[in-house]
Length: 302
Image 1 (spheres, one colour):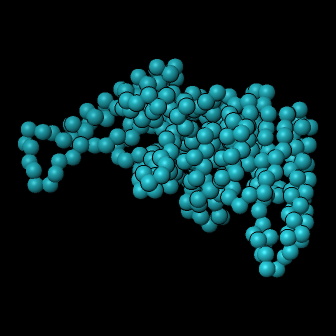
Image 2 (image 1 turned 90 degrees about the vertical axis):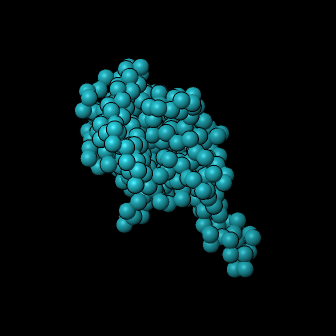
Image 3 (image 1 turned 135 degrees about the vertical axis):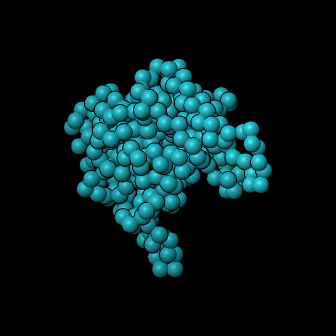
């Protein structure tokens, strides 16, 4: 992902602070950008056809929209005062994730920034359907944020070094390029992780000539070597202590590294299965995100 020029910021209602907008403004310090401020509004009470007449519902809807547009324009004016190009869009829609996807298809932004949709007491902020839908279907890079301020905590890029298909190889490159951009923005160290599965032998079967511990050590060394080669190919310099080849399934291994390093941001890819396979198998990115409690940048194959 290149340094974004067109940024879609999802505004969550009328609030004193909008973390997603404050993050977008950070990019203006490094690049000329245009910020699209987007808000979706919907009031189920207006579906009470037995209580409200059609004219009354229409009038109330217009009042809701006018009030929200007034608020959104006040945000636009504050952004414009900083010399940043900005536009506003307000839509009436029942499903937030669907309208965001429609706006993304229309505007084709370089980046979508949205505050994580989590309740204050939620342990897993990605359990809610809005963000999970966007992780799977949003066709633009998606940055899900928790707070307004950048910190110098590590950034973690999660790659798959053994992939052989072109989509995943391209995704690895985009993940690392994005990691460089955000490492520069955050002034934070860049770490890279790759998860791999260890070798096991079925219970009751004995192979006396096979040293499983040595085999697993060799496997880890191989993955570290491949990880170093991937970074060298993409012109990224990182000391060995910032390269992590971790045994285990991705959702567990990556989460372990995040907790150990206290990462503020994980950058990873999401292929986004659809249909029955998505319902039954889910998505590796979603499985990883279900274990995380930090900010996330999700990328799709080009």
